[in-house]
Amino acid sequence: MPAGPHRPSEECRRIFALLSEYLDAELPLETCDEIEAHLSDCPPCVEFLESLRRTVELCRSFEPGEMPGPLSEEVRAELRQLYEKALRGRPSGGAP
Amino acid sequence: MPATDAQQQEIELARRLVAGEPGAFERFVELFRNKLFQYSLLVCGHHEDAEEVAQDALFKVFEKLDQLREPERIRPWVFRIARNACLMKRRKSVFAPERELSLEELMPQAGEDGGQWKLEIADWSSLPEDQALRAELQRVVREAIQALPEIYKTVLLLRDIEGLSTAETAEVLGVSEEVVKTRLHRARLAVRQKLDSYLRSSRGNSSRGKAN
Image 1 (cartoon, rainbow over the protein chains, first blue to last red):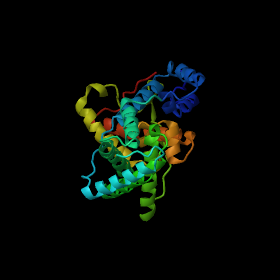
Image 2: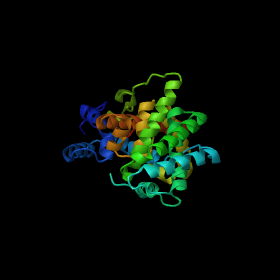
Image 3: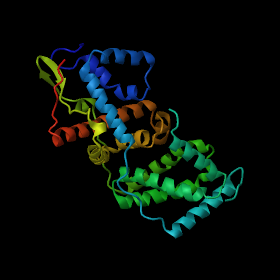
């Protein structure tokens, strides 16, 4: 493995900074190859990457804890008026 | 990044809305009011403030709807309005300075086991099989996101929860794509760190010490 015996290597630290972009496929192919070469020989980085991947999964399946209260009919009517005005102002000039 | 089915449906809804099709207004208000509220709640932190900001933003959306030229860009367009509404609200309240998160503080601790280094992290491998734990983790994720400094929270919300692209998020927030990437990574690392602490404390699941 590329690290020293008791601590992450500089390469581990460099890759640590790039892991989100790696998961999001936003890195150049060449950089991905470098990361994968490092991962193939560094189980702690693989383990960390997996924990980050699962964190992203959990964030993406985030469910709101609270919902807004009901919209009053008065506000809804005001919004509809604005909507109808906006439609008249659009180039196509449609009507609801 | 290809649009998900939900994103495609939102774009289709926006097309129907600007075309004045029946039912589009009601559906749009229901869906995007909820989105605006969730964004405002995470940024403002208080239910009442979030209700007020979401409503202000919804009025702005309809006031400016005649300026929406590309319905496929409805999501970044709406969230830009939400962001501005939140900023207006914040100006009226006590100013809280932003805290920067450093990579150093988000790196896991490294220890030693059998002469090799190891990460001091929890065992994440059993998460998919444990549904009860996943529900509890959702609570931890929510608290972790709410605890993020705002500049990180907004990026994580737009990128990971709402699924905007890096470019769209940069446009909404008025920052570069590089800044979005940096903030997103640190936001995810901070949430990961909270989850890891939770897993280790709640499951007696301290570092496995996988030596190399």
